[in-house]
Amino acid sequence: MATLLDGPDGVRAAVGTHLGYSDWLTIEQDRVDMFADATGDHQWIHVDPERAAAGPFGAPIAHGYLTMSLSNHFLPQIVEVEGFSAGINYGVDKVRFPTPVKVGERIRAGAEITEVTDVPGGVQTRMVVTIEIDGGAKPACVIEALSRWLV
Image 1 (cartoon, rainbow, N blue to C red):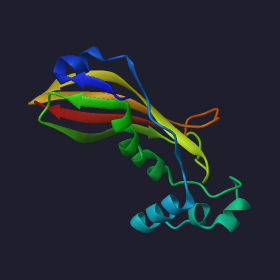
Image 2 (image 1 turned 90 degrees about the vertical axis):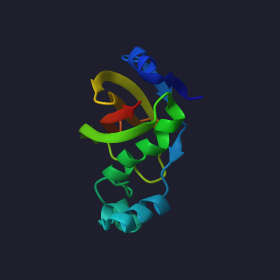
Image 3 (image 1 turned 45 degrees about the vertical axis):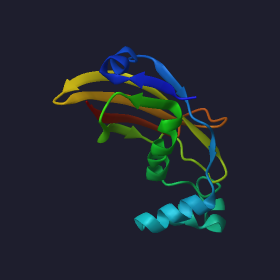
């Protein structure tokens, strides 16, 4: 069940609060292949399972940007924001990929709002989204995402 944040005051009240976790998602080779087709990044560590099995990670791995982009899949499971006319992805301040995601592994995200600032027409949030690997010691991806919420 997603955490509900209602309007600017609800968003401000959530600063420093962990909002919860998404469901787990298994990364399948088909998803990696489709991302490779969409981006033109067909590097063998992603799309050649036989060669990747003998490579540095022992299996094909998801593209880092695929892992990052899945934050858009996970976030609606974690948080629901109401009381605004629109929410806009404003960008990211920092992204890191501490551990690659191997095909067949399960990942999920957790999120925390760390900052809210007033902007013309609404508020801007800084949310740290951490994508973790089931059983992994380090996260797969840590994103400092910026969103603008317009009233």
